[in-house]
Amino acid sequence: MHHVRVCGAIALALALSAAPAQAAKQQKVDIKFAAVAGEEPVACGTPIPGLGSTAQAAQLQDLRFFVSDVKLIRRGGKLVPVNLAKNSAFRITRDGVGVTLIDLENGTGSCAVDGDAAMNAVVRGTVPKGNYVGVRWTVGVPFALNHTDAPAVPAPLNSAAMAWSWQAGRKFTKIEFADPGGATGSWTAKSFFVHLGSAGCQGNPATGATVSCAASNRPNVRLKQFDPAEQQVAVDVQAMLAGNDITVNKGNAPGCMSGPTDPECAGVFAAFGLTAKQTVFKAIDR
Image (cartoon, rainbow, N blue to C red; front, side, top):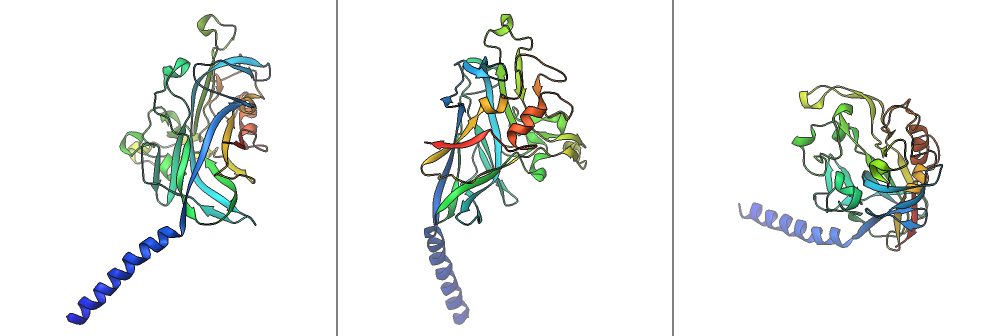
């Protein structure tokens, strides 16, 4: 019995000493996001000039998107997963995959329609100590976490604003613009929505049905040159909208809601990298 107690004490001591050692081999990382239009910052309540193929001014109405499976890139190309910090209102780790909701709207101006004051601009976590030269992530929620009953799961997956009941999942992006002149403005369509998400989905997760989707629409983004200590990721709404006249609706929903035949989706899909080299995200100085 004495031998068992001694062995147990030794094992506990080793475990306790190993924990600080493991922690010492980790370094904190914050991957910060910022909204821009070209080179200019974007914010709720301030008109954004020069958007779309006809260079129109617009009001930001919402700017939120999910980021998952984030990895930093070592010189030589090795991908190193970012282990997210503890779960919060904006991040969760489930089944070994971390998901963060980036929320760059503050509920003021036109963003008061659907937004709120709470914001989050960072993916926060740890990586093994070392030098990193780039970053890679997926825009969206992994399939297994996406097709779940939103009210029954923890934040941020339970966000009502990001739920997409008719597609049996979530909006991966909710980026919206409105005619700065309001109801009496000059736009034929008064809004332009960018709701990127899985499309052609069947099956209701709330009833336990198996879900399948014709198009996953989860862009993989890679910035080969990115220093998280010195740089941030810019979300360029000017580049995102460059392929569309945002003042008119050529068919289906206003803007792009991920429909494969929606005329406005061709430009949005290309900008996010689903059909061409992505142009929405770029590294800029902090």
